[in-house]
Image (cartoon, rainbow, N blue to C red; front, side, top):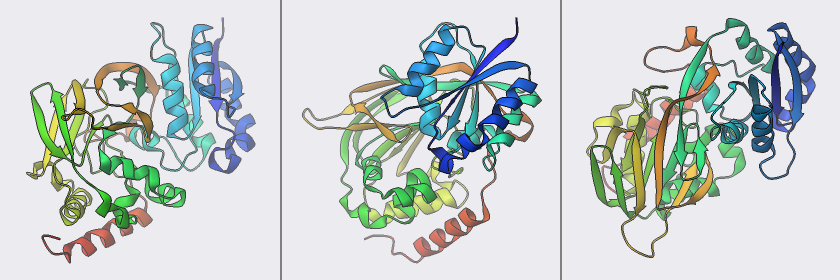
Length: 334
């Protein structure tokens, strides 16, 4: 019997380019040996998640998530709880496309992205479980992460998850530390911090230096806790990130590899919002577990270097250089 593929796509992503290219995309998977059909997501809650679960339970061998990182997250949430999970492919058509960066999937043309299937190269990717939800790239908590909800959408489009650090610095004075209690494999942090986050790949909001030693399939998160809430110090840390990932040894940072994390406010009555792949994912306390090599993804393995870095656009490189120069002129303290 011929293998089957289901393309789950967001018809509004990428200025509706997926809709325009869908016939060509379907033909690519047909040529790769899959009887292929498509499903356009709707505004209904969990549309992509429910369809992914249905396709998996119906025996589809391949589920293709076409859209932004949010669409990929939703499809993963549909199949991750199942014992028998289909392989996944992705066609990026969002704004930041962190997952496509990590897997070195072409981001400019969805048909070229689909053609990665021809290489027949796969990787068993780690994903994260947070309570009853799953995430593919990042989980975070703390007031610093909550500011992202207030960043205008046009800034998010260009700068991604860390837009407020580069162009939204006017929001940073609102940062106040939270008393956190964070337990991880080798220890526990109790104290004030502006944020923590767990990363699964090296690409966070389009920036590839935040986790310079990320591994995609080692069964461990990279845990980063930012202990300072001082505006100038945070900007200096951001500059270190952009200037070769030199933040990892900074005393204002905790940087650890861990399979499991439990996070909660240290004080009863305090609230800590959790951000999963850029969206609100519930309130702490919450336990995060790395599910090692949980879902098989088609990827461009020939282009994934050992250190998991990926290419940046010239425009983004110039933005980073300008930011580092500006921070270098700041005083050491506010």
